[in-house]
Amino acid sequence: MALPANLKTVVKHTAAEATQAAHEHVAKTLREAVEQRGQAYLALAGGTTPHALYQLLARTASTDEVPWPEVNVFFGDERDVPQDHVESNYNMAQRALLDHVPVKPEHVHPMPASASDIQAAAAEYESTVRRTVPDEANIPRFDLVLLGMGGDGHTASLFPDTEVLQENEKLVRAYFVPVLGRNRMTFTYPLINASRNVVFLVTGEDKAEATAAVLSQDEATRASKPAGRVVPAGELVFIVDIAAVRLTDFRP
Ligand code: 6PG
Image 1: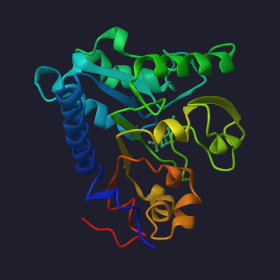
Image 2: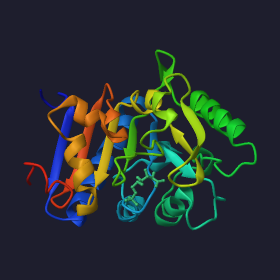
Image 3: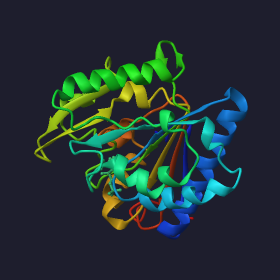
């Protein structure tokens, strides 16, 4: 057994170095997308890990590192809170990044996960993705989907032992997450796996068990975690620190 041929790992000694590597990779991917196709389509991750990455990317505002006016920003998942709520992934990204770079407001698409009719809101968000992101084989193809991973191996809001993991038609789903006791809205595997590039930024020893599973040589072990079932046709990069891979043989 072996890791998928398109899976690349970038192992750094510290979370700060991993974040810097992610910054360089994201900036390069967005530049190349715009050079090749005129626009870039990006889906941001939530949680706490990407905050420092977004702060680094915010510093590109005064450089030509990222062609922000040609970048279209979506969110891979969102909590069921208003967009100005401290737990909102959009709010975090807006404060750390989007308020500081010349991205066009009409190119930023927050996920409406606190809508009263969350199912209709998920369908509407899927329509927005389909209307905006160029498709191949009738599935919108992002240039870059940025993901984190929880200690249980969830990614975006694809949580273990939930039926949304089986979704192979809809591109965006909203559902009640039992382990959280809350609703979440999330990209599904068909949309994530259509991306040209997927980048996981995973740091910290609390992620070591899940990271060891998703970077296992054994396919069944990888698939035992939701993050391990992200198998894009394009490039898959895990950018990690040494704490996250302490249970593996991966080293800087
Ligand atoms: C979210 C994220 C989620 C996150 C993981 C890791 O909405 O929480 O999208 O998938 O990436 O939970 O979160 P941390 O980075 O906070 O460890």
